[in-house]
Image (cartoon, rainbow, N blue to C red; front, side):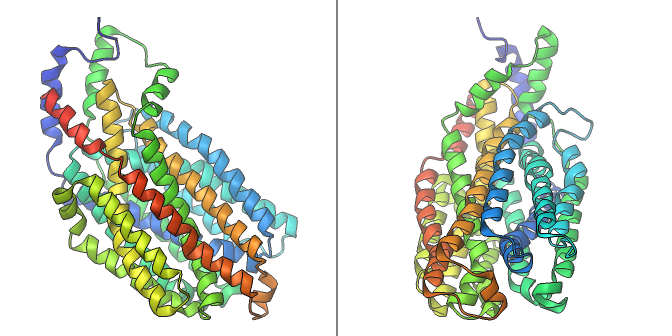
Length: 476
């Protein structure tokens, strides 16, 4: 006898028709609407990655020990809230969908704590500053940010099940995200200087980019429309017919974390975000202390992001995906990142520029398809188990991302602490020690190089899209 959660044969025709309907192309408004979220999120990630540690060490004079503890605690709590967010979204049933209400409701509260961190009152005592920063960082990372990230990833699954359309959506999202990354990376320091420099300029910097980080994701929630999920609708009909209860939590966890693609997906997100956090956060230290000029950030940003933008602009990633398949393109993107980081190990501006350009190409291929890989794994879990666990399935990737960022944040603090970095020396215009500069180079390119090699291994196991396509054919 077939288990209660599995769809009987008399639903096959219904699912087939629903599947065909879901293959329709997305309107341009939906493509743009979803991509706006990536653009806004990149603004927030950009200022956090490039300026947070610098602001905490040089402006607030907080110790690396405190920063490490704060980031570690926030990410550990976030590991729990990511999973809870998945359960919450799976149990959300509104007229506008599952994910959209959470995007609309949390867009403002995701950016508010970031603005408050960069505008910590100078009248506070050292202890007061630590409490202020810790509470707001916790709210951003482990509360509102957790809900927003899971909801955004779930939205990709809900707006279409067409793999080609998903690649187009993530390609455009990647394009806008890279443009916002370019703006933050290239013009963040000039904006900071325009509003008063490292002591006073953070108000203007945070106001501009936090405003963008709120408005664009909010517009995503307004513009995008969720279509009925194939398995969710069919499972809902079956549930009504048999009046069965929801799947037990233990069963849901078994379906999701027992999936053979769960570990590779988790590993990809963890490793990619770990490398990205260290790479982005160490850039200002590396350029200022090793290459001798923080102003190189503009040239470096153009070298890294223009090739990535061009890849997305000309649709090279969707073309490569159609010709080679997702797994091979993910591996190719990882290999380009390996080569780029290897070149950046040479403390010479020309090598660093070329390395960033090579990395940018690889990052375009990898980052665009990383989001669609999450949707593929969610589809695989839903189709295999004949149920809708999109939110919980998405939380695998989000947990990997958050845990990777946790390790990256701790890694930045550890690299600076081991290297003996001195915020007081930086404020006084004094040079860091030679060992500090070596460790800054290790953090900027050495550790990310190792991570990229691991990405090659994880990517080589990501074939979920092919299995999903075969499973849909069997249904039809």
